[in-house]
Image (tube, rainbow, N blue to C red; front, side):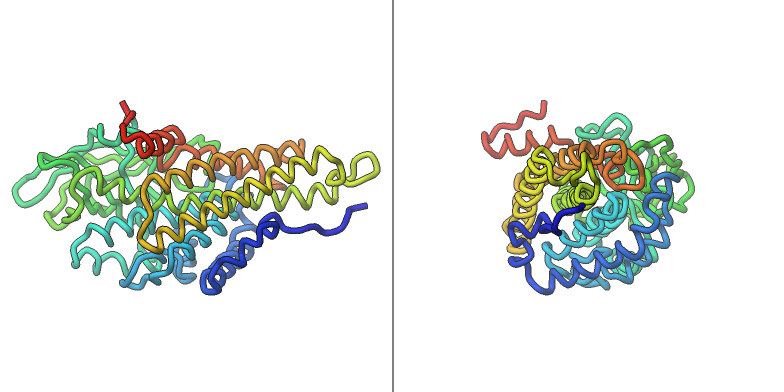
Length: 392
């Protein structure tokens, strides 16, 4: 027979006791949305390789999470911690849901908010905050991921206009977006451009055959002499540093988000182990099971404390890029380890969509390498420690 109901893993460290009530309220609202809107369908969406992205974007806009950490233009101006907790709950549903929100809000909207003109902000941000207009971010190229400075996409002046050509790859939300933030090399250096996807010369074929992030829309972005007006340039985005600043925003959300996937795996596994009978007693009553559960709960708790600390540093304006790298490197790596360990407890049941574990594990394989691979984050941390860059 199943044993007594135990504690939730994060209750061990009383994590919620150190979080502001307003931040907890947002977390609760997002958790309710995920429970009601995402969980009943995510298995089928993952299996089908598609989800109703535009419909979900509008619903998430009504919930208030699209660009929620930005100020003005219909955005909430929430704390970084509140945004992080929202990402945690979204990724507890599926990494595709958190990716939808973070690419739209922390990459596309943030780029406009931080580097755009007053006119660009007013034109795009209000409708992006509601989710009526969807954005994507195009930096990675087929041959340039970890080395974005090698990009081949080019923009050249043609009178008052710009002509943009090149190919971008692994673009989340690509084919279903209204606007892309595209980074390209110009005679003046790397610049950011606002590119409506309906513009002539733009195409966005979807990437097929994915074994990870299957519910998410992932596309190429092909640009063939795309003519853009001078007003398409983000005036304050000059140099690769502007693009990397956007990536740092998205990485912050992952610090929290990965823990949502890990927590969901651990919750499902705890329930399974307490109800699965093996040799006349619950699987959870065996020492080897409990040692696995204890180690996973410990890493989840440590990751949560790290995420909250990073969030508070961001709220105080003291967060450094290397600290974000510490958070992403640790929390994604440990979340993936938790998902894999949970699968060993569920055994054969763990490979089916009846349980979320293998789905999360597959998704986390992508999260491990996007917005900077683990190796890139190790080098960022290494440079902070030594003062010496080792990227080449």
